[in-house]
Image (cartoon, rainbow, N blue to C red; front, top):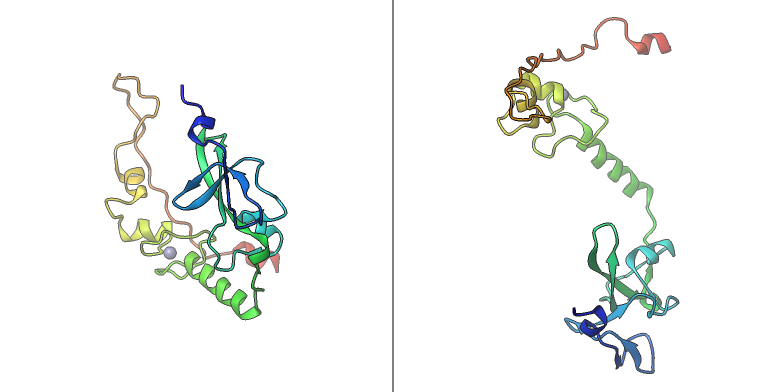
Length: 185
Ligand SMILES: [Zn+2]
């Protein structure tokens, strides 16, 4: 069995964060490879670690790549490490930028048919809310199509022909009449 240490042997070489050659795990596409725990934490940081310090890479290329095993997926992943000394402070969010972002997020939630704020981000394809999609007639590839008009699928189907109750379409709720808004006022 080939071990990871055989795959990434120790390699003493010049590195961007030190005047003296440092032990590395070789290179990948010209960038120094490091294994867990050998990079100097006061000189190198990931994008996320920079962000926690109020910094951003600021256009620099990664100084090194850190390989480690992502435990939930059991996959080996690479993280880009940047030089902290070359990092720049994050640009502050101006009121104008904040307002533009809010507008963009609101547009994603607003139904283009009825103009209601759905409260959640609507599908990028059309930005139409579920009641409107139901009223307009559903596209064959819409996930509501199978739910409302197709044959119900029994997730516990064991091969026998079982009879399932037919799907009853739900009437979209109306906003007319005494609503909670009047009660709250
Ligand atoms: Zn709508």
